[in-house]
Length: 611
Image 1 (cartoon, rainbow, N blue to C red):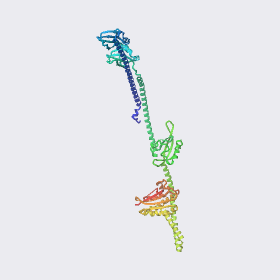
Image 2 (image 1 turned 60 degrees about the vertical axis):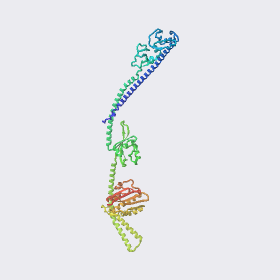
Image 3 (image 1 turned 135 degrees about the vertical axis):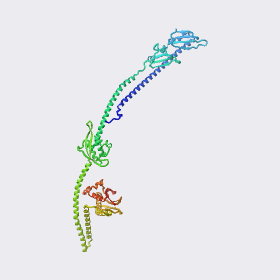
Image 4 (image 1 turned 90 degrees about the vertical axis):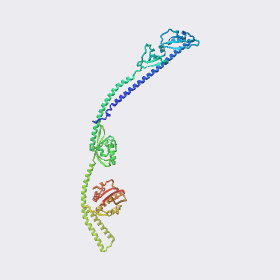
């Protein structure tokens, strides 16, 4: 089983890690929120302490003002027990007031002395006619000062205490004999005087509870086990998935190996004709890679360009389920440009749920099989044609032998008639001309019969040094009358400096006559002007002869096809002319070739070695 990559084997832990990071973030947020709340609580405590201290200072300033007012009343001669300021102060937080003289002896006291909790002294400035202004000593109750100066709502939230510089309790709203120690409770102190001998301390009775943090902890306590359990399930599922993927990859590799080892082409298409997959044999068959083919929709790149409409109609029919069960033959085009014949079978392509999702095609390359069949057919036809040709050769040889004597007799009788007329003194120009032409035609017929007999006789070429231009001119004279009747213009462009070449004059003449006659036959398919040009030249140690015309050309046929035995473009042709010409030229160690001509038609050329 293939081993999964490490990063995939540990992906199941990613949700758990993210959950832990989330929990850490929530805890940090809760901690920061709690710190912010405590900071806000402390700031509120400080603000309340400063506000309460300010109010108490106002109350102390009021006591100072009332004490100064009393001093002023006493300096004005007002009796101590009758001073309005005294009555107002005793009605407030004053407990007693002592009037001392300059030697600090008591001059008067109102009311009787009580427990002295805190003293405030104030120097009195008497009139100039007084020798000693004395001193007023005021005693007041700090608890009453707190009760009067601290709002009720503040006393419900805080423990309010007055503390001296030695950290001893001076007064408290709780009336407790000992100081309330803050401990871990938030508290704050504010000095009430400039010397710092009297401090106001506020202690928060009920700090803000951590209501959010326990909830967060409870949620985390339930969330983490669930996240761990989900991660475990994910890990198990991921292992199953990796194992299933490994099995799938093995099966896919096994299936691909089977498909690629198959000797037939396989292609899968969806319901719209889109190629889903192809095997290696199919790719080699059409000469294209799988990347080029997969995902391609009709028309396919391997369809033959001459039958696209037919191929498209057949594809639509097959996709609709009309493909023949016995398969169908078609012709495709290889990427290299060559044609291939294939036999295609179409079967439904079914998925795992049993639903048909497309079509699976099995493709057989029958190009070689068809070529062999055609070759066998051509061989059978060639054998039949060879038999007919053998019979025809025998007949032709017999005719040539039988016609040779009558032609000789005709030539002899014609010569005898001419000699008799001369002896008799008959001088008729028309009669003499007719008899002379009759003799020439008989001689020409004799030469043709002789060439036929020599051509049909199996013998080695009679090689001898010869000049090729006279042979070309002789072949042109043989066909001159025929070309004149067909309105064919024959033009000879011969190099007068051609060297001699070793060849059989009769066979080379037969090759030239055959090439010229083929060119003349091809020109019958077009309207005048009909032109044939014959060139002779020397090129690279060879003597080259070209026969060019302005006819329809080769029609896409190759040299091998044209020079094959029994292949003919004429309805009455036997297909042996060019094959025999090629054999003659090759017997002279030359080459016969065909191609397009500059005149627009075909060019047939042969070359003979100079040495």
